[in-house]
Structures are given as C-alpha cells and as structure tokens.
Image (cartoon, rainbow, N blue to C red):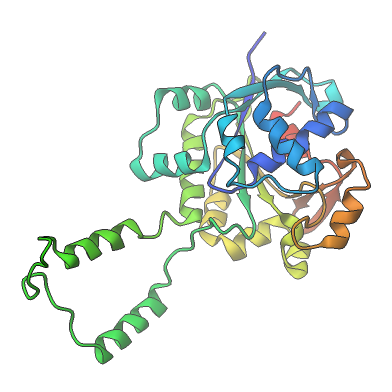
Length: 313
C-alpha cells in the first residue's frame, strides 16, 4: 500500500496547539469529515492542551508543562467520514520559532526535509490578532520620523568621542549590541511566503499524480471584524497579508484552499457570556470553518475539514 501523509506547520502562535486540542473531541466522538483510525498511545501534549479547552480556556503559549510533553507524533486518519484512503497526519515537534529560524538561516535539518518530501499535503496555519505577528516596516512613515529626529536632535556622538567608563566597557557599543538583539524578526507574511516555497519545492505529488494540496488556515476567525468576515478568507489575506495573498495567487504547482477557522465559535477570554454557555455544551459540537468559492462563503460546523480536504479522497 502506498504511504500517504500530510503535515501541520505554522509560525509562532499560529493556532496549531489549540486546533489539535479541538480535533481530539471530534475524533473521540467520530464527528466530522475526518476520522481517526485509532488514537496514538502517547499524546500527553495534546491531552494537556485539550484539558485547558475543556475548562473553558485556550492553551497558553507560556505553559511550560505543555512544552515538556511536546513530541513528534502521528495519527492515521481517513477522510470521507472514515471511508477514504488511510493517511498519516504528521505533527512534528517543531515550534513556530524553529520554523522561523529555519527561514532566517535557510537551513533545514535532514529530518525536516525527509518529513516534507514524504508528504503529499500540508496544513499551514496563521492566526488573526496574534501578538506574535510581525508587521513589515512602514518605510514612508519611518523615513518621516527619522528626518524629524535628525532636524531636532543633536548628532549622536561616536565611540571615539566618549571616554571608556571606569569598568572599561564602551556603552555605545553595548547599546548597539542591545539594539541589534531587539531588532524585529522576519515579517510574518514573509515567513508564510517562505514556508509556502518550501512546500512547493519539497512536497510530493499525490499518488494519483495530482498536485500536492495545501490548506491555509486562518485561526481565530471569530475575532475578525464582521465586515471582513463577510468578505471571506481570501479577501482577509489580501487586506492583512497582501504579500502572502499575492504569493498564493501566483502559485502554479500546489492545489491551495483557504479556510477561516474558529475552533469553538467564540471568545473564551473576553466574552464571559459565551464562556458560560460553552461550558454547558459538548465541545465536539462547537466551532466551524468558512470556505470561500469565488465570492460565496459557506460556514460549516466541522473543524476537521481543512485536514480532510488536504488528505483528499
């Protein structure tokens, strides 16, 4: 039998952990387009995240207990409500920060290369409203601010102008080093473009000769402004991540579909009324995805759909 697999990837705070936590109730209750063949034996990482969700809380990035339990794992799944071909869902122990570092250094380990080269699909995550999103510099406004600073402030002194302090160190050099360390990271949409490039280069064709499938998932869709939600996921990317949206539009090899995702359908952190109602219901009945076909958007109460689509028939 031909081995088939899809892989989950994303940058820092892109929503992968909470999505995995939400998948588990659907797998246990056998709800949704995607069904698990059997549950893995050791998934303490996902169990810990799911426990947060069951208590009406999102799994936080700062919970070190979750990171301790983080390991590679895989799970055999079938699309078509359990009738499709057997496919392995790969969830590598690769944090968003490690993907960022790989993009920054253009270095990928042989293990990661092998993982992507043996997969014929992927689910690429980003999250609306994440405080880890890095926006590109606005050079027009930045230049105006710099010109204003130059006109009003005296020229900075050089290291030669300042004597060394008593401890023998150069404060100016130390400040430069500190500023370099605090430089903003890679803009998120640049990171997404590079991750898509890796997928384009490395993913295998499907066993039927078809193009590799990539599901782009916009997590926390319920937090997107109402007018933007009504415009759909593609339009959201064009507005918030135009560089990445342009890269998607010109992609010729990959088969790509964009999904809006709300794992539980509301905001547990800032909406006490929703949280109260959420705790009274079965989590497997919560959440939805939004599909966009041309200008029409469809809301479907099945959070497994992005993976099911990437898996295919």
